[in-house]
Length: 549
Image 1 (cartoon, rainbow, N blue to C red):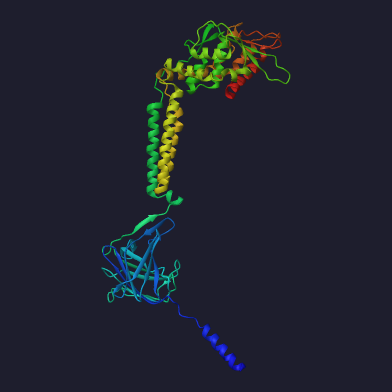
Image 2 (image 1 turned 60 degrees about the vertical axis):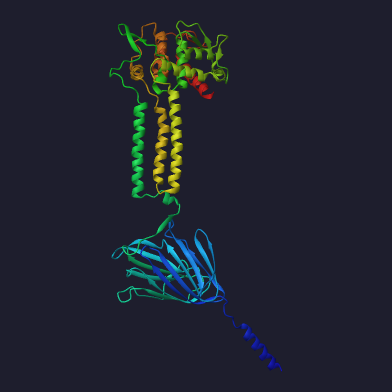
């Protein structure tokens, strides 16, 4: 009994352990590929299978490399089972068409592909290569795949690859393509579900038309491709862009020319043997000097104007006693001056030394708040009214900066489009550089008139004169007063220290000099030899207060 039971159990285990046949499997697939002269490829597959049907994936694109891919157009997809249409369902995405066929075996699946032929270099000249996976994404395994390839002419090259997707090897058999057998045939198998069989057949380019449609994938390398075409386009863009900026500056921002004769704005006029005094025959004030020289009203121009107003008798600067551990400060007191003032000078004087009483340099930020713009406006208007500029330098700069930023915005949009949709990213960089140059050149666009250009040359000559003229040629006994008249000009043109040293040298006694200068008073213990330090600190403090507002 025990032996009989053992035999029965063993028999049951043997029966249960035998694997059943797969419900869906294909015995074989017969393929017929027809390549037309216009490059269209017609594929017919006869699939013999066990089960109720199968699913196959037809690609709509295939990568060439990281930046490009072939695009296929698959049409006329049909399926039949014997003489009746099979149950066919398709699902399409951007990458593939999934075809599901249901019916009795065998099912014939047919479709047409455009885009599967592309140009290439062959051993005998240019050829058109047909490359297509006749088996791809089939959901059932097959024992054997065989087929033929027919075309309008004998092919130059025939090849066949088979294996898992992305790792294919050679097919088991490929034959034909010769004079004796012009139509190639191939065979391979067995193949697992999802394996591929890719045919590659090359024809003379005159026999089969290339239909490849190549799509491109955006990458940084692709966008900034250093191809000869891109480099040439970038060079042309740089050349024409640079030429345009240069032409624009020459036409709009270059100063109007003047006569070659250079006359200094100021000069030292002889008044005796070895003696001379400084004179400015034209009404060119120190505030004008800096504005004409650099086309901008800067703190140094305001500081020089303050000193000039003091020297001319409209203002007195009084150095206050320095408290222990405190900062040096000055009082600015208004005085009735002997000459008329320009509007920018009146605006400045009203701000720093109003009629109701003096103010301190430390109070300048509050005093000038909301008024410094009016002073600058008045000075800009003054240099235009005097005929030194065609228009206000600040307005010209602002106008051209606006144009430059608008141009940069347009260039940025163009650059984004070039980088996103073309391989001319290098050209985009050039366009941005040209547009940025327009923004930068805006500061150079204020245009001096002929009179302004002549004045600028005269200022350069005056600067050289202040830096080289002997400082000991002032009339004896009047050195301090005469040097005072040129000090405001040295603040903007240079040479201040050497002329201050000359004023110190004119002090021949040891007694304090708190009021030796009509325009600068100091504490009772102050000597004229302290003037270089005092005036230098005054200039730096005023400029610092102007910058701090």
